[in-house]
Image 1 (cartoon, rainbow, N blue to C red):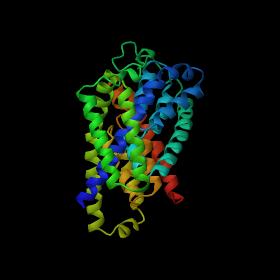
Image 2: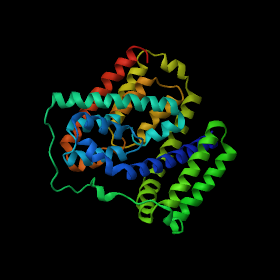
Image 3: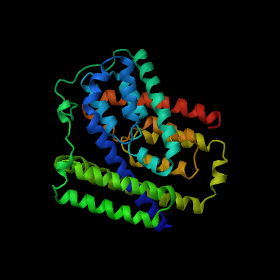
Image 4: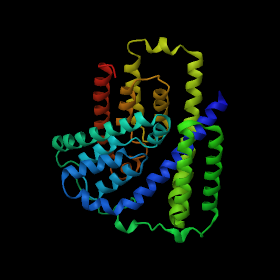
Amino acid sequence: MLLIALKQSLTITFFVFAMMVIIDYLDAWTRDKLDAFVKKSSLHQYVTASFLGSTPGCLGAFTNVSLYIHGIISFGALVGGMIATSGDEAFVMLAMFPVKAIILFGILFVIGIISSWLVDVLVKGYGYRVCEKCKLKSYHKSQKISFGLEHIDNMYAEKAALLVSTLVIGVALLFFADGIERTTAIILTLTILSLLLVSPRHYIKDHIWNHITKRHIPNVFAWTFGSLVAIDIILSHFNLQAITNYSGAYAILLLLGALVGIIPESGPNLVFVIMFAKGMIPFSVLLANSIVQDGHGMLPMLSYSLKDSIVVKIINFVIGLAIGYTLLFIGI
């Protein structure tokens, strides 16, 4: 059981790492194109914030916070962006059930847009102000990063470690994985190796090594492995069918999922992702948890305005419960 959980955890973690790098690269490449689009109208704010939130990982949420504190998007857009955000759990969902994950992200995107408009209508003008002495990571065009073939010959410890580990894990998955998992591993391995070769030194050290590899990956692996082992133990010692036949079981789990979603941390929510992947909870429970939780996305917001952060969480909690229980009632 432990070996199987370890293999699954390593595979999922590698896929998460690869997708984090790709998303980070896309964020760095397109960042200077967002500002002009966002300022065109309120609808553009809502669409942009929800789109950024629905992209896997926390980068979109961090960008939304930065846009908000610079007065570029409204409070409603911030709320909608956080509703659409699933944090690092999004990468794990893509690794475990990609089709359903994409459907979930699409639903969160739509809910985010509608919620953005509704919140702005109900609390017009709330929280809309510019942070004049912002200490958070700014959103500026000067952050554009130059990628190119001129970086291929530049070798150093972090780059070498990432290249070797990516290649080793990718080759290992060729032997231990099968079907679509093996094909995905090949594509991701080649993509990451290519991006590492054309990326500048500061980007690899600051973004990929110090942020993704050292901060996110250990947390993703630990929570994934722990959740898999814990759920396997539960399944081997308890009659899941008997438990879920209890009429209020899913209702309680949905409330618990929404409460766990309040925590500004990605790890605890992985329990609900894995439970859904194993057929232990319905889609409505996962959706409620996803609406309320936003990974690490709220952490920079907490340092800017505790009050605004609490209001965002309260609104998202109410929306998550309302939509979750509605879907649960109709059997979804």
